[in-house]
Length: 452
Ligand code: NDP
Image (cartoon, rainbow, N blue to C red):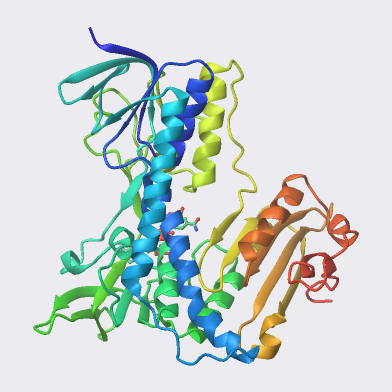
C-alpha cells in the first residue's frame, strides 16, 4: 500500500519549504522531496551566496574610502578568496540545517532524492510510490546556455559562486539581473570584467534612465561594457585562455566566461506532460490565479511557473496556495507593485511602473528625479552618483513608480513599496518629514517636476 499524503511537495526551495510548513501547520499530512539539498536556488545557488559575495567584494572600495576618512593602513589588505568562499559555504550549511530543522519540527516528512509525477495523485521515487490528495510542483529553474560553439567552456552562476580561484579576466555574457550582479562582484574583487550583451543597455525592461545611469556607474567602476554584441564562438587556446569571438569581428581574451543568459523551468522528465499537465513553450507549468495546473490536483508555485521569478513571490504564492487548499480561504496573489532589487554595484531597486510603462499605460504623468553625489563621497572624492526617481500619475497624483540606483537602494525602496501599495499620492510623500542627513530623504523632498 502506497504512503498517503494530503500534500506532496516536489522541490525544497523557498516556495516548497514554505508551502510544506504552512500546510503541516494547518493540519495536513505533508511529504517533501528534494533531489539536491534543502534550500533551493535562493539559499544555495542564488540570493544568499550572491549577496554574501556582494558584501565581501564591497570591502575593496570601503578600504580605499577609509583612507579619506583618516584611516591609515600599514599594508593594503588583500583578498583571500578561498577564505571568502569557505565563510559563505559555512553560512549556507547553517541555513540548510535550519531549514531541515524547521521542516522536522513542523512534522513534514522529508525524502532525499528525485521524485517524478506518475499520475494526478501519484508521485514516484525510485521503487517507492506515494498517493497524495494534492501534489505541488516547486522545482524552480536552472541556468540555460545558448547553442554557441565552444559553450562547454562556459560556466553559469552556479559555478561562479564556487570558483576554486579568482580569474584575472572574466567575460560575462548577458545583461539581466545575474550578469550585472556578477560583473559588480568580480570588478570589485579586482578582476578585469568585460560584459558582452546584445541589447543597447543593461537590464532590459527597467526604466530607461535607470538602465543608462547604471551603465555609466558600472563603467566608472571599471566594468568594460560591450553593448549590441554577441559571442559567435568560444575557442580555448593552448595557454588555457578563452578567446571569445564576437559577431562584429572583434574578440575578447579571458580566463573564464560566465553565461547569465536566462533560466528555464526545471520540468524536464518530471512526468508532468504524461499526467496531463499543460506546459508553456519554455517548459513552465501553466497555472491559474490559484496556482492550479490544468490537472486539478496538481499545483505549481515559484520559478517553475515563470510568473515573477523572485523568492518573496514564491513564498507569497505558497501562502495563498495553503490558504486555498487547507484553510478554506481561497486567494490568489496580486502581482502589482512587486518591488525588486538588483544587487549590482551600485545597487538598483524599483517598485511600480517605469516612466515608459506609465506613459504608455496611464497617459499623462509627472516625473520627479534627482541625481547627486552621496555625502560619503564628498570626502572620498569618489565619482559615484545616486539616482532617485518618482513616477506620478498626473490625474490623481498617485505615485505609481519609485526607482533608485545607489547605495542602500533596496533598503530604501522596501519602505516606499508599502506606501505605493497603499496608494500614496505625491502630496503624501511631500507631507512626510525627511530623516536628515540621508539619501532616503530625497524621496520626500523632490519638488521640481521634470520639465518645469
Ligand atoms: P534575465 O532573464 O534577467 O536576463 C537574461 C539575459 O540574457 C538578458 O540580458 C538577455 O538579453 C540575455 N540573453 C538571453 N538569451 C541570450 C542569447 N541567446 N545570447 C545572448 N544573450 C542572451 O536572466 P538572468 O539569468 O539574469 O536571471 C534570471 C532570473 O532570475 C531573473 O529574471 C530574475 O527573475 C531572477 N533573479 C533575481 C535576482 C534578484 O532579485 N536580485 C537576482 C538574480 C536572478 P536581452 O535583454 O537582449 O533579452
